[in-house]
Length: 210
Image (tube, rainbow, N blue to C red; front, side, top):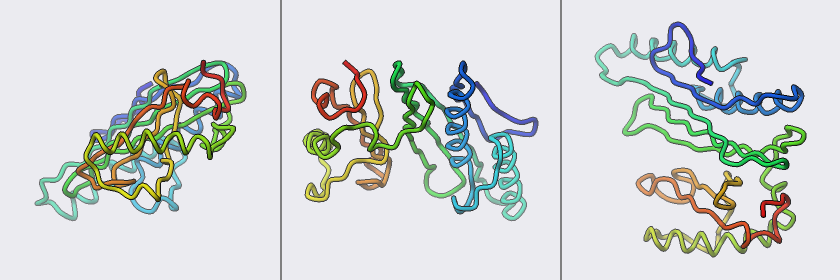
């Protein structure tokens, strides 16, 4: 669904909406809404008070008007684009990717991708640890794929301090690991993303995918 307001020229939001069992769908939609509100927030993330996406859109437009009033000579135009996509869905697990791009000035805008994993039967949002039966074993597998990925990109990093990314999700290609810009490499490197085939990680997974 597309969400906007009457006085909106800067923000575009297109996100999936869960339907069906209300107790399940409401939990999923609430988490998606929280992620979008957070992405649109200007300032300290601990100070988020918007009760809805619509109010966040209105607030973003208001903040730009204040900026434009304070700096009328600035050619900088603000913008925000948020898109959501269901990248995996089964009777057990649903993974939704939220891609947000926000530009409020500076050398470049901020692109961020987040994975939201849900128990399809309850609508409960899952932590990364809940995706695995043996996260230590999975981390060892992931490290080899990570090393191969950065080798292909000719990146330099300290393998001894390998950590799993904040964003891990299921997809049709396997378990996707995604490091956002700056998470493990300079901005110029961009996003680092790779998939581990389900058959390679099956013994470590909490959800059946084969």
